[in-house]
Amino acid sequence: MDYNIYTGFHAEDNTIKEKQEFFDIWLKNTLKYTSPKKIIIISTGFIPKFNSDKVSVINLEYNLGHIGQQLDGIKNHYYCGWSGHILLSAIHAYNSNVDFFYKEQDCLAFGDWINRIYGYGCDFSFGYCNNAPYNTEQSLFFIRNAFLLTFMKEYMSIQSNDIRTLPEYKFKIIEDKHRNLTQRLDFGYGRDNIISFNLPFYAQHIDKLTLKEIKDI
Image 1: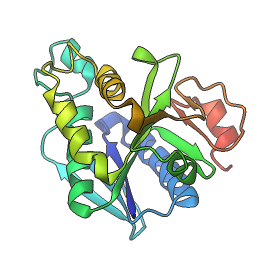
Image 2: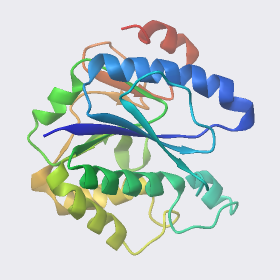
Image 3: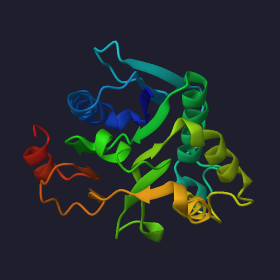
C-alpha cells in the first residue's frame, strides 16, 4: 500500500520567517527518511515555499483555531483546527487510496520510522508521552487505509466538542475500543525531548540548542 504524509501549517505575520525556516528543515527531514506518494500540507493562510514535486497544498480560507483559542473563547467551534485538519486529511487519504501518516508541523523524525510502524502490523498507532494529556502523543501517528472510515466514524461519534473532550482523549477512546488494532509507538520522544539519539526517534517543540544537534542527523 502507498502512503501519504500529512501535516498542517499555520504562521502568524510575525512568525512567517521562523516558520518557513523550520519548514525547510521539516521537509528535508521528511524526504530524507520517507518515500511517500505525496506530502500534503493543509495550510491556513500563508503557504510555505518549497521545491519538491512530492508536495501538494490544500489552502483553507478559514482557520478554526488552536484548542487554546477555544478554551479562551476566542473561537467557538465544535472542533479546533487540529481536529478539522485530521479529519480532512483522513478523508483525503481515503479518496487517494493510501495509508495516512501524520507528522506535525513542528515534529522531526529520524531513522526508518515508517517501516518500524508498518512492522507492528496494526491499523492505528500513535505515541506515548509523559508531558501530554492522557499520555497521548499526536505529533506522529499512523492510520491504515482499511481503518480510515472506522477512525472517522469513531472520532465524529464522540458526542463532545474539543473543549470537553480533548483530541488526545478522543484518540484514547478509539484505542480502548479497538485494542486489537492499535499499538503505541515503541520509540520516543515527542514532547518529552529527552533524546538519546537511538534511531528511530522523533521530537516535537524542539528548542534551538537541541535543534542544532539533531537537524542534520
